[in-house]
Image 1 (tube, rainbow, N blue to C red):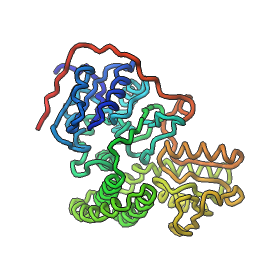
Image 2 (cartoon, rainbow, N blue to C red; image 1 turned 90 degrees about the vertical axis):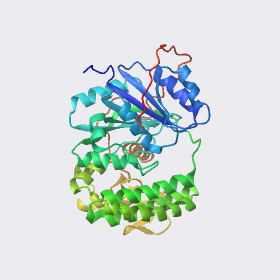
Image 3 (spheres, one colour; image 1 turned 180 degrees about the horizontal axis):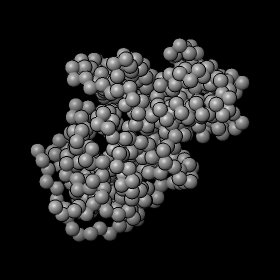
Image 4 (cartoon, rainbow, N blue to C red; image 1 turned 120 degrees about the vertical axis):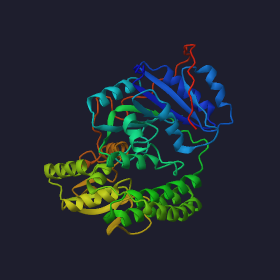
Length: 418
């Protein structure tokens, strides 16, 4: 067997965003990293995206002729020649050196199935993109071992968009692979809002999360996770003015949940805790509380994993004074006082716990709170597993797009399995 010339295959699906994709490909072409290929899956574009093939002959193009949603990535994974799959969006790109570090990381860790990259917004002030909990990756910046991806069946074909990474991560965890957030693997995300429909987004988020927890939640947690999904996305829908999409998602989710329960493949409690990074979070929360003699905390904002953080604090016998969130619609939440952020003063509790298990979001909030209350203990229980001196959110900015790039003349065609 002839060895592949590539260690890593970058996979980018796109649809009707030719100008955005052009900028992304120019940036990737200029990277100094070694032994990687680029695969673009054109999900039925009608805006002239196919003309980019002339300007970017290094790219391998797959055109299924229709919009396959997230399942389009499966076509690219089968065609890929790299042993690692680097998932990107058409508006995200890696910082120079990130691809080479990904290859080294997987070579050093044969138990590693996937890593979540540090994804930061390309526009100032370069805050982190909304990420997932520690045991999943997002498609705008996540790397997966191809062997593991194919063995568990790739992305689900019944999700369209949103939450598909959680489904794949659950199957990787059930198969015994590790998934970790690595802060030294930096990806920039332009987060272009073109073609974004908030009602459609809410419909898919609600439906797919209800399907996910019906399929994978440990039995003793299933009902609570389904209720958390309903409550969380109702708040999002109010914020995004997308209540119609939310209500459609609830109805579609109920039907999807019935089917998912018939093929239920629940995670063990240990696997569920790995998905949320709860073992690591508990150790960090305990160490922080013991070192600073923290007996009571305020929880700052209801974000991803906040419910699980509340359970951890209670397990460690740490008193929760209140939850502070400007999206408060009532006076209580999960049996705790719910207050506006402006009502908080440092004398209310011994310290603040950021209410997120998403490493990037938690880091941003912890930094903001430490600046606001410089002499007051602030803690995030969701740090990155690997960091470097330049990982602070304000320490770097995106590398500029090249003004011009020379491309080799060879064209690589991709056979598409149908």
